[in-house]
Length: 164
Image 1 (tube, rainbow, N blue to C red):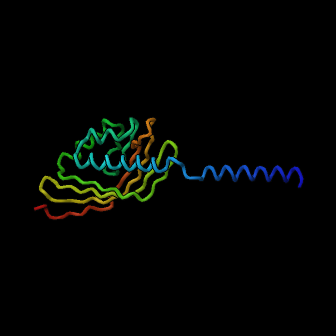
Image 2 (cartoon, rainbow, N blue to C red):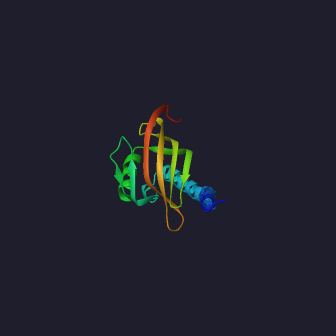
């Protein structure tokens, strides 16, 4: 075997080893998924309680919320104000997230999915909005997760009779 072939073989072995290390599942994947699932549970709870402060606390200081029907909202204070305004005329708010895909990296994650938001309006009419979302999540220094960027859009809204 020539020196050139040995060098090429060595380089190939190093490249394969690096690829194996990079593609190996991270030991933190279960913890990261559990942390993001917990963040999503807190989001659902903030909706249920209609708590703008709890909602805003789920976002980073540089967070951006984008929705075609709203002006883009930036930062926790604006997010709290948006939530307070949107929930003012809603009762019995429920949010369901259906995660379709999640991509994890060391310091961030991207989540794609569908949602259902159900509420009763001031006339007692029960409505469910269906839509899609993508969110960029940032891992914090303490290992917890926060929302850094959210983009969503409505697919449709269904109206049901008022609750008895």
